[in-house]
Length: 339
Image (cartoon, rainbow, N blue to C red):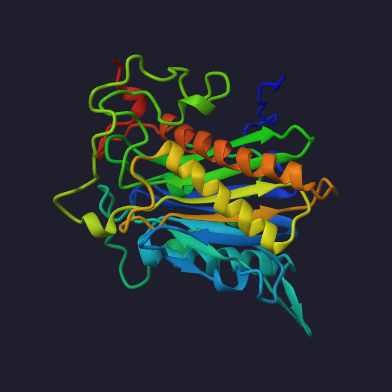
């Protein structure tokens, strides 16, 4: 008999030992940054399946390249301007003496990815330099085990085709005692809810009432599979992207971490319709902290990969569910719709 899945104590990615998360937001900008700090450094990989990614230091994460571990990751709004956020997080960790040791120097390794939130009602007239470097510093400096989701950090200005997007997180215990966690800035071109309803595509994986407990609609709405595309008639090519992290306390190689990132992309497909489009930069980083001291067996790794997908789906739905309304909203917050 299969046991029902359980969340970790926080139902956040920080249930994976060795990780802390910090958010920094600018209300006027309507954008923000989320930083994950790995202490000690964690084995890392990445898989990009969207057609319009924006990234920093992702090449080094390939299994055949030299650096095995990272000191942190950054998810940011701001499109390409948001890549500056990694410099801020790197500056903070350098001050703490963290980083890859090269002679007398310490170089914090902070890969990053961005989502597009420039067209969301915020004031983007920031002058010569964008504010993301400072936001990245603030996010890394504030990293703790407890953090906000919804309209926070990298999810501050996120949108879906029908509702506000947001920063989501979730965790789960795997049958063999390992922990898996997900963190996501959900800003897709498509929808996370089914047709014109409030029901989430991720409903089959919901644990308890973590994103409303509505389940699947019965019968399925007639418009369930119809395509709703964000800003179809304007700025379609630059207004999207879901960026995420999947993490575990298992001891994994870089190649296994990459496989975990690949598996977690199935969580996008289960929670977003459509996903991985030419105009989404959909990306998943993977982190393996090794804090459990255990290497999964081949059979257990199958369970870990499956749980990576379901946990990612839940994190996406939780980000939209937790988003809060603002007078400038171009899309309503999920919580404001009553029917």
